Length: 195
Image (cartoon, rainbow, N blue to C red; front, side):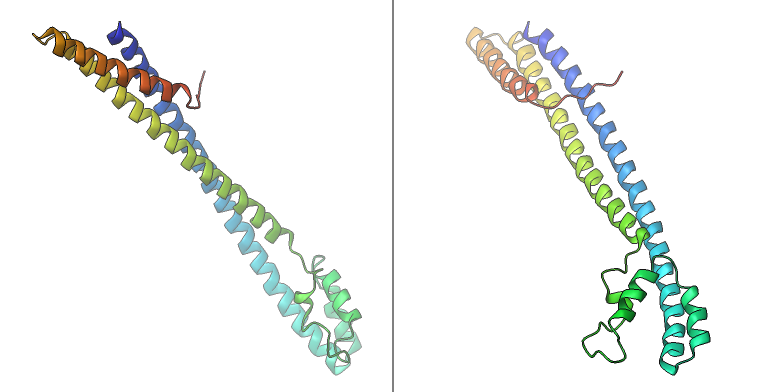
């Protein structure tokens, strides 16, 4: 009886180890895709910041020199995400106010959607990586369950081959204890089913 039940339990644990390995692989794929997308968004944000800095430097030179035509020309070329920070910074009167922020890039209004998306994608990648580690641990636990069930099968099988009844009973009891403990542990483990 122990041999039959332990065989089924071994097969179940092997199946679960395989399923959790697949779940881990999917989570790793999600994490990698999110990291790739986050890198692209970060690159876009860095490019946008470079454009904002370059146009702002030209505007600042025109502003400081009092060239209204050139100043207006560059101001119209501010990107939509940069303009609110520039307007808020100008309102601080930076040429006359020593407490004004050094640049509009230090203003809370300077926000890049691409940077925020990169942050969100990195967070999602971290969560997927954590899920992958959890799933890998579950897979490993089920593999250990396979090993422990195989050990109980070994002890149960050996109990029938021994000439001493006492030794055979001891091996059967040992196999039963290993089986029951492993079964109790595996029964509390999460289950993954794929149809």
